[in-house]
Amino acid sequence: FKNPKIAVIAGDGIGKEVMPEGLRALEAANKKFNIGMQFDHFDFASCDYYLKHGKMMPDDWFDTLMKYDAIFFGAVGMPDILPDHVSLWGSLIQFRRGFDQYVNLRPVRLLPGVPCPLANRKPGDIDFFVVRENTEGEYSSVGGKMFPDTDREFVIQESIFTRQGVDRILKYAYDLAQSRPKKHLTSATKSNGIAITMPYWDQRVENMAKQFADVRTDKYHIDILAAHFVMNPDRFDVVVASNLFGDILSDLGPACTGTIAVAPSGSINPEGKFPSLFEPVHGSAPDIYGKMIANPIGQIWSGSMMLDHLGYPEAGLAIFTAIEKVLSSANSPLTPDLGGKAKTDDLGKAIAAAI
Ligand code: NAD
Ligand code: IPM
Ligand code: MN
Image 1 (cartoon, rainbow, N blue to C red):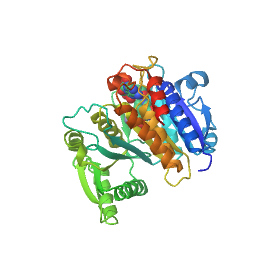
Image 2 (image 1 turned 90 degrees about the vertical axis):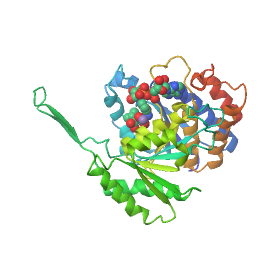
Image 3 (image 1 turned 120 degrees about the vertical axis):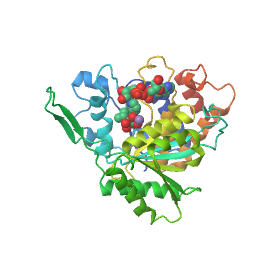
């Protein structure tokens, strides 16, 4: 992408606090590597926008954002103002589905200088990817309520696993595993209890595995897999999972590396037909919003992933290296979740300076 055009959406809560730090790092990389990246800011996909307009986004959001090479996103959701399913299905989930961002790529890495809650783990021991299916599975809009307000009332919501949808996420995950030294793929299912969709996923894994003879495949049920994330995180390289299981694993993984606040993600349309979206894994954290103590690293690292995606791996690496450098040097301004007392922008400025 030449002179990439970026749509910036800060969203709600701490999204508005960490976004300026993500941009500060991107601007530093932009300058240093002469990328010519341009940013336009949008106020939609936020609960503030909803309060003004009665909807989360303007009707032409799709055409507006299609003009961009990527979307840099903060977080959305203010559950005290608007139910989460309204705000999220009115924004983020529309992006993921509308732009066919079927890969949600979420690195899990123990960074230097971050105390690990698991005993005897050092940087290098935990270094894997969660590859989460991002458009179907358990996140489906098929279903509804029957016999409302009677004693026969019930709700039903389908899980949808299409052959195309499962195969394309497995292919992406296998390609990624094949490109890494360990060449190891772990598939998360629950085929003992969920007896139709999950055995289907297993069957598609077996089929895809044939094309990747050099990749070692392991299958786990999600319950014991969660336990292994805590007991044996060094076992994993690429973990592929359905939408819901991938969501859960991509909070659990980063929690095992000390704080969910550093975790980045890319909601990617690998074919490049639509813009991809880069955002931290965490949400809008209403419990700490307004104090300027949010850790901006998840946002900043997401910017690094965005640069990789746009074809500027050196610039992406420069941001990531700056994060590592600041985390591992003495007297760096760390936010409270990292054991420090610094403010969001103190940490952001230190990382931008290191770039
Ligand atoms: P959350 O990730 O917002 O917060 C969970 C906990 O982690 C909170 O205690 C919070 O203070 C802490 N935390 C999160 N990010 C942090 C950071 N950068 N620095 C320091 N601490 C941080 O999850 P939640 O509380 O379940 O959700 C809050 C809102 O965010 C809800 O509306 C939810 O739907 C939404 N949400 C949005 C996204 C997204 O936009 N991608 C993701 C998750 C949750
Ligand atoms: C995430 C979030 C979203 C998800 C929510 C806010 C809908 O938890 O990006 O991980 O479940 O995908
Ligand atoms: Mn999540």
